[in-house]
Image (tube, rainbow, N blue to C red):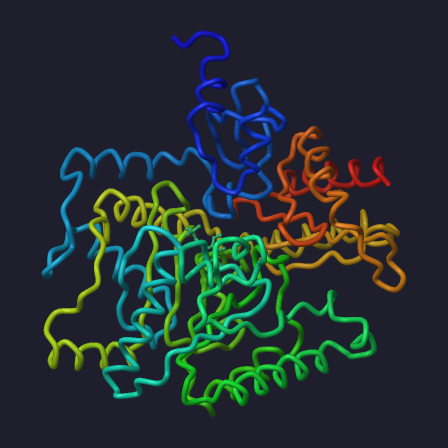
Length: 457
Ligand SMILES: Cc1ncc(COP(=O)(O)O)c(C=O)c1O
């Protein structure tokens, strides 16, 4: 048994926490939280708090916490064979079955899945394979990658470059020079000079900006565009009307591949298994992670279309086995968790539940807070929702972000028993609970947010 306060002092002394203010944490100026358990949509900490997790960890625990079939599958696989690699054609029943199950759920033109460990490494894999593909086809100049401001694609060297958020670049010497960002499809935060544009006109503006970037850089130098079908960490923003319809033909005309980053949207978050078919996209690659195991264990994947895979096969015929792989690719225990998780997603009817409960939660939030003068927009798709706070609703006057009103409100909502996430850029409260959420639990979220917002302003 640990002495009182032992964990807390080890934590301050030893643990480099990701995305944390390091100085404040060591100096004990910011709180520490020790999580101890979870069940359904609830998590518990060591101070005895029970919290409704309105952000599903990092929007990844799609099936909710403590699901016995996944726990049993992990334990069984660990006992049978904890590890074997996937190099040189090796597999396990779990990794082979999971490949088949993911592809059965993915758009039909997807052909194969390569397994990684995180969303960041899966995006890196997709960029490497994009370059490899272009080289095999002899298009050695076609290397630049287009991403978007406010995108989030991870925090590795390449994936962090694809990310379009300042904090992930500043003092890290990123983005790498071959990554070019275009405008964020964020209608509510459009510049003042575009105030009078309709959503469709704003989408046309985004398309024009993309065309201008391609013209500046030269289509012959651009390999691919990477994009979340709906913006996640950069603000939780579904695309404006007509956005993908305007962007897709430009990519096709300029022979630019599309990498759809479905790390957040994959496996039900928007009320459909994947977001690409939902928005009419036909990507060349898809990045998955989070929901494939509901984060019970780390696992990611790069889904590769038949068109690309044929070229990669040609490459190995010409050059020998592909020089890409991780020790933990298709780790058997993670794959077993994935198989059990996907079965549970079906059995619990979680995707249909999201399609039903998401609009309900959105409607309830809108009726509770839609008229509040400091709530600028309440938006979302499925169970990926946001409440955007403003100084003044009229004229879209935004809050001074240095005042950290979003994070302050997130803390107050937590005191009301619900976790929401203050999104990195802007005073935006993010709501992305486990996809098993029911109406009663949705009402608890609405009440906690409503109370905190109306008390604060
Ligand atoms: C859209 C998207 N892509 C990639 C990533 C990176 O995934 P990971 O944190 O597993 O590296 C994230 C993480 O939140 C994400 O939201």
